[in-house]
Length: 220
Image 1 (cartoon, rainbow, N blue to C red):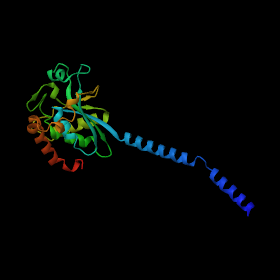
Image 2: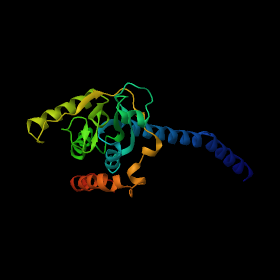
Image 3: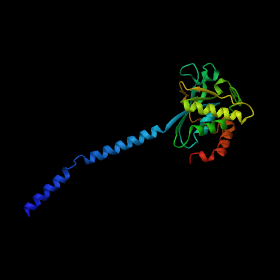
């Protein structure tokens, strides 16, 4: 019996030593899998930059779309580095008020982002959106790739050919250079200031129109 127990103990020792790093390998495998998943998620992300008048209005709309990860208000297309809101509003810096969108391409496409873009502002008025006048309020798509450039240009040609608007689309299509994030108080402006007159009388009607047209694309 003693000899049997000794033999059995040896087998157990051998069994436990066959893969002493099994637990470590398992953790390593899980870590690798997590990294692969993270890489895939990052691979599916893309960026779009639009100018459609006051960035408070446009930001509020795109924040509602399913597949949009983040929206930042800022400035692009000018000559001055690190412009302030006052410099942009004066027209001296040459920048447009824009939003920069990070989105999941498996949930929403650039084409769909453009569909919303044409709907929530007037792309036929040069350097103007309603009462907001100046080059900082110009209609513009700053493309991040040739695909975005070609898609936008094709869309504009189609809209003009089909006379989708009473007047021709004058949206500028330019390559993105540097995006400058606007001051903190401009970020998430509508959500943080819904009782402000501008939000109530200008942004809210746009939001209601947007939700009626794109209700199936909203975040749940």
